Amino acid sequence: MKHEWSAGETDVLARAVVRAPSVHNTQPWWLELPDGEALVFERKDLELPFHDALGRDRAISCGAAIANLDLGMRVLAQRPDVALLPDPGRPELVARLTVTRTVPPTDTDLHRYSAIARRRSYRYAFGDTELSDYDVKDLIAASTSEGVQVKVLRGGEDLTALAEVLEYAALTVARDSGYQRELTLWTVHDGVGPARSTGIADGTLPNSSLPWAGLVRPNTALPDRATLAQRLERETVLVFLTPGDTRLDHLRTGIGMQHTWLAAVDMGLAAAVQTQPLHLSEARASFIEKLGLAGYPQLLMRVGHPTLSSLPQSPRQRAANLLNRLDS
Image (cartoon, rainbow, N blue to C red; front, side, top):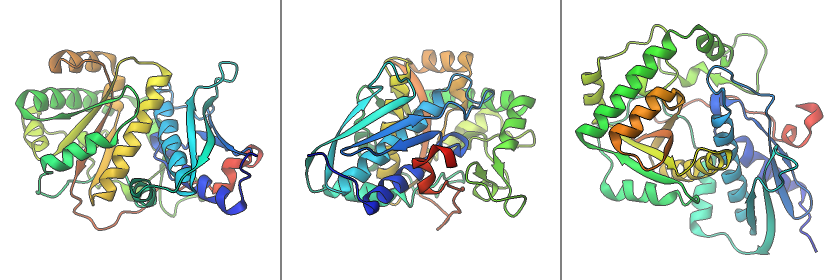
């Protein structure tokens, strides 16, 4: 007999999905919960033609939602099998999670699920304490998504190549009027206009956004490449790689990214993700060549010790709206 989701279980699963990170906080997904299953659909109507013309970040965002949903099912003791892109006739269906057995959640399940509500995008400078080698190994090991490799960027050559791609991307998007209009559209100004359920809250952004933290504006102060490389020496930066560059690779990247991010939060660390530099084909190709990467870099993740005890959260949809397309 298929498991019938109770109202309480439905709320747990919907809230887990709502709190997943997404590009510009667009929350580009729908959720359906038939008996014994959970279905995640990608909303292609939420487009970012300047930032994410190919929909790569949107698929990565859906992967993060799938990871949260999987954890939500696990803490309810409902262990699922996860099938990605399960129906070629329904390309908008990105995942089907089917309950296969009842299994108590593991300690890892409980810890990562608990971290979902505490996860924030940390776009500020980190503290001076470096991550230990053990911490870095644990973060890399947390991403068990099939085909996704996580590489830590360390040393002069790695950081010089990273500084180069970040500088190039920052200068490019700062001058791109279409990108800047789009970013403004998706930025929520506290107390201005009607309440919104999507977008980036300006309260989550530093007064002077840094080029390696993403969201570069025309007035962002850009250090020279050498200075940027020196500053990056105080950071731990992970790059997520996949063997291909397909939609399936992007979904798997999102799943792996989210597990690493939640592991970081559980360890008392903070993180933020940046993808824009890797959308520029020439910068991405140069990055691959200079670092000798065996695969396609999909995203960069900064991880470190936070200096702020709390951060505001960008707005979220009501959990009930995920389950009713007509109301969203």
